[in-house]
Image (cartoon, rainbow, N blue to C red):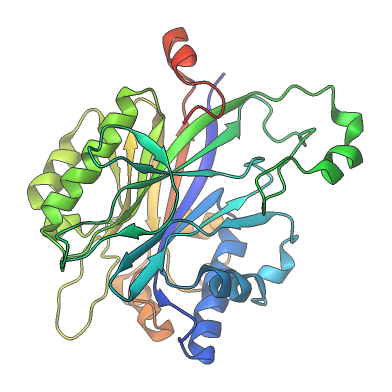
Length: 340
């Protein structure tokens, strides 16, 4: 088998909360909803969502998003991180035409040597000298003829089999769809906690541990490593084991005379994945009306910085990649379906 092509989007939405003014929530949601509807990524990692339920409601009610069948995308609310009175979540929106079971959420243990099921708020902050604990989504993607309708899907709210769907498509029960697991690490570093370099080092160790355990591992999010962890950034650029999939342009726009950087990007296990491209995505405009436009047309720094006009200070980044077939029988034995 030749592997599974997929696209992924990462987007820091800049503190999207219940208390955010309604017009700002709508402005952000309309732009993000149109971006998702146009690109139709396999999954999207969000950062700085302080109210996942409100965020989901506004995204799904955006005018562009209503054109997508309501069953096509679901959202996992993600882990909740707390520092004092502040809290934020990292929801995962995913295309149910490709991801048929609800993703599972895990957290690296305190020793950073393995995974445990996510069970509640994750504490971080300068007061406790505690960076954000590493959280990980685990899910399966179909291999082979993965565009076939499956005989079974989950109820994406509960994570249990959708019996209504199974009955409706009982004529498909003969289909034996094979799946391959992948693991996606959530990334959001913060200079107010400890050095970015230490946080990136911790994330890299988590990724190495998962890789050693046989996981097809990638990390996605807001790193701030280009300027905040220059040695780590250089090592990853030159690594033969990991692929730093990042756009050429700055993706963060702090304003007030501060320098931006390529803060948002992906890190992929070079053996498990083949990264084809990573593109910074400007706000919706008439120059980019399709996925092909984003993959083939250059985008300027000025175009990307227009996200600030929408009260978002990061540009989303789109990854186009392939999940390679599991390398050997030993790995197949090590990683079973739902064995995260």
